[in-house]
Length: 318
Image (cartoon, rainbow, N blue to C red):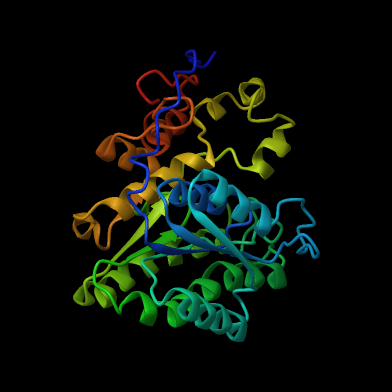
């Protein structure tokens, strides 16, 4: 059985107010990692624009209950200011309008998080490029890559007006891991590799202007959709280890949120420019924890335990 130590008392995300006066845009913040990032930035006092396609009056094709308004309310409740704006980041005109509004209202942008995804229903596990539905594969690539490019195109001129800005490209997998592993399918593999490369390329372009660009991956994320997939809630998530024992290494969306908040609050973050980072790696660097007080290190666990077909045991990994 996996090691499931009693939960420790939750540790604070970091000094409250350390991002007061800062403005962030979390693109793709309806649920999952995007919501966790937005809330943790809010917990440090930031004003956070949260975008997505699911609102209280109109759902995206996901047809799920989470909304950008709910995320904005959570940001405000955490201590920041949440502002929800309905945006399809695949439509340049909508993204341009978003950035114009943000600029008019705030006059600055300090943190840009590209977390747009929308591909869960478009990829087919283990399906070759000739077997995979072509329309679905191409749709996945557009949602996972073009949306990030469009958003950076319009948002970066505002962010670069001031030195010290931060750009975070959220993906699945570190550069080191993905370079040596086939990820799910041709289209999924390509999409996640492309986002890693985006951060590398952006680092070369924004670095000379005093900004920092990184790629960041959570570990095995206990998102709303993942919990639902296993038929569990955050309160009883460990029950899912009966089906997938390695789920014991999983983490909440708050964990990767705290990683972004720590980066945003670090005056020396430029040392990470161009790097591929994980939530577990940054937890060791900055000393934050997940909500239960643990520090899951999923990507080290995958290499040293799961990929070696060893029994699930998170001892020393969380």
